[in-house]
Image (cartoon, rainbow, N blue to C red; front, side):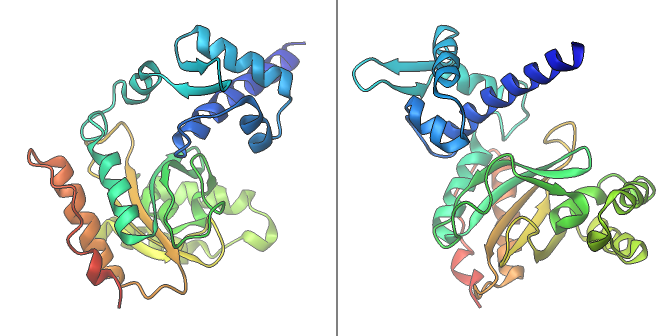
Amino acid sequence: MTVALDSNKTKIARRVIEVFEFFASENRRATVMDIVRRYDRPQSSTSELLGALVEMGLLYKDPASRSYAPTPRLAAFGFAAQPEPIASGRLFDYMDRLAQTSRAGVGLFGMVGTHVQVFRWVQGADLPSGGVDCGASVPLSASPVGLLLLSSLGLEQASRMLWRLNAEAAQADRFNLADFNEIVARCGEFGHVTGDSGFTKDSRVTAMLLPETLGERRLALGVVYPTSAAVNPDALLATLEHGVSNCLGTDCDMEAPFVRSMVN
């Protein structure tokens, strides 16, 4: 009985997060059927859930269109207890502008257990939609961004994590532990990485570690672009470093001055 109750609570929590993520992915308004179709959920329980979120002051409901929209209270929850420049929204503004000017996807990545997860995602015009989204995750060993985040743990702890990942992986997904330890060591030395994204086919990522002051655990900011794109990773990294530096400073210049030189 306890297992069933716990499973039911997990489903409810997951559905609440799905609603929030739907609005986070640039959907300003949504109907019950928008949520139902997106996540393949029952219409009756979805309607009940949205109604409860309205009562709690997290969503507005338009009686005429029967659509829902997030309230400022929901936005306040998102930024609560977050350090700068996340709390002020400056980092997210920079991500939005970078995605627009570069036409690539821009993601904020974090480590959740043995996985690297997309904490925030801004879709780029040149990247096929649906491949990456907020909440998407893959094993740390399956993405260069995961290995970059692993490097923040120190070589000893990272090596133990890699051993565990390799032991639990399917035969086809296992890797050479010594090679991956070496990659993690290089990531720790340089603080950035470029390689196949690991989240979707035919895409690459250039990512950098964000400063330790941006949360209890290290985060990475990365740009995901089609493998076929003629991108200069060094110029792209310079763009990221410039933007993050400005976001952390008192004078926040949101422009991305190196974007035009990203293309080879």
